Amino acid sequence: MKKLNVFMGIVLVAILFSSCAGAIPIEDCVINTPSGFWFGLWNGLTIEFSFIGSLFSGDIVIYDVNNSGGWYDFGFIIGLGSSTAIVKFLCN
Image (cartoon, one colour):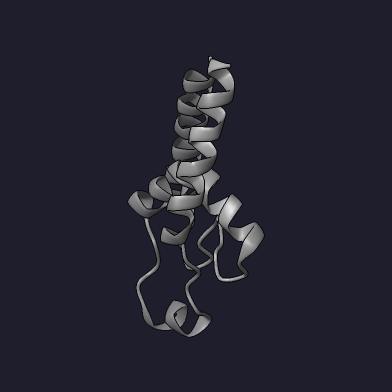
């Protein structure tokens, strides 16, 4: 029963936070500076919420296409690993 409550809590939080993730229009990608390490870290940490939101809305993406390359990817991977570890910890 406890695992079900934790799972339902994660689903509720995912639904609430999925509205925070948004896609950047391509016009903004050309004008604005590319996302770096810190934004990649944030996107990796919030990937669960972004993924669930992307299932219901085409405006939500899980990976920023306007990124700085290696540093963004490095932050994304660190955030992804951290968020996975946090979810695994909460579900055990």
